[in-house]
Length: 380
Ligand SMILES: [Zn+2]
Image 1 (cartoon, rainbow, N blue to C red):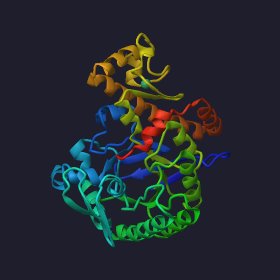
Image 2 (image 1 turned 45 degrees about the vertical axis):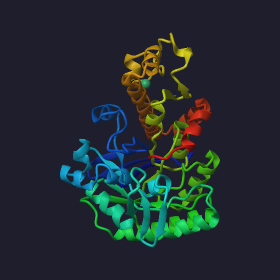
Image 3 (image 1 turned 180 degrees about the vertical axis):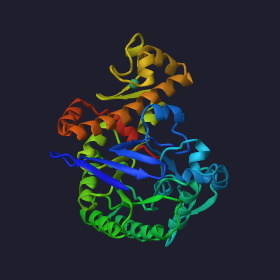
């Protein structure tokens, strides 16, 4: 399923190709997040035009609304949302452990109350795989337990034990035609747990592997450490996916550490509060500094918003709550994420990734506001 085309001689960065039932994905890749069967504020044509290769859907949310019967009747998630390229679906594990407030962990899954209407629901390996089978995603994720980053050691250990047991159960469930399944490594910031979890999952021979339990409110050094503790135990000939990350600079840091796939709600979420992401960091476009600024959001950017509109105009739209304003910032932010990945791939192909990496990190100024927004993340 994954073909490793090239490895950077100076870092652990990799150039690869992922083959799925709905097409080929070049890696490293950013996957825009379509939690509710829509990448917020963007339509499939725009996504295609900006170079989106694969998007995310969400088991937890889609199972609650519109419900499986509707998606089954529509002929699966691709048809329902009119997206004929690859889709990866999250198993719902992350949402059960972050959104659903009252929950009871049982041997074969979790009993919880819907965050919407409080109705009693159950999600486990069997249910999560069945939902993903009906959704018909190209890549399904195993149902895992994702504890908070500050969970006590005992809880982290139990989560790893359940994650391994549930991964085995997921592996035995029926799949959609051509559907691939990724294992998810948990273990928090414990070297021993990360190694144990990775080795157990690799022994089960999944199609590829994700690193979970990151982007759960931990400080950045701890996040990088969790990736570094896991990566050496993942097979080189399979893809590595860091779940729920990150800022453009974090993605570049992770590519240099051997990660191939990313998803993050950040570009579209912060767009809705008027924050634009650039190669130099993020800034709030609503500020009075941009009142008469007739430059594009980012000089040299090829996105539709930067080619057609000025900061002054977009700032005005945002301040009078015109939908076009937040749509255009969503277009720019998503384009930027995709373009940074395309640039990383181009540099990997010609052997100049290390220079690109150094320069990118040097120029990027992380914003405290963005880091705080990531801490509050509850949706993926
Ligand atoms: Zn732009």
